[in-house]
Image (tube, rainbow, N blue to C red; front, side, top):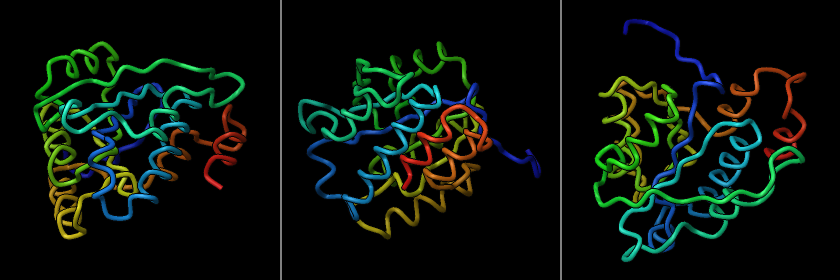
Length: 195
């Protein structure tokens, strides 16, 4: 790989949200900020036409996706992007890549850059990121959209993912990089969203 610069291009990017579920979220560090950032990232990607895939780990035990993030997936987000249905990908493997239905969705989308958000950073997020990198995907981790029960676990997982080749960044940086410029479609909506 060498010193190759990684860039986000909206036509080659997909957002994957890992396990933002009702029985996991309450235990996360800084859960309110996490949820707010994740909601903005999901809505921003939808405004920009970037596909969003959400996973749920053992829904029967850990519950559905939290209401705010489920709403960000389904409600109208701009004049051009109306209401939508969403079907989370059910998994029991910690890595989303261990779930054949998830791999199939990614392959069908045919995009090689994956933005990752989700919980927990040091378990399902980290294992998914490492498996994606191993399969040749370019991975951006939205560091303000991941969390663990402890900051120590999050910090070490961020280092591990970075060492493995993932690019650590923030949701706002991601949205503006996908946008590219103030004259691009979606600029006004994204600017309003991040305020």
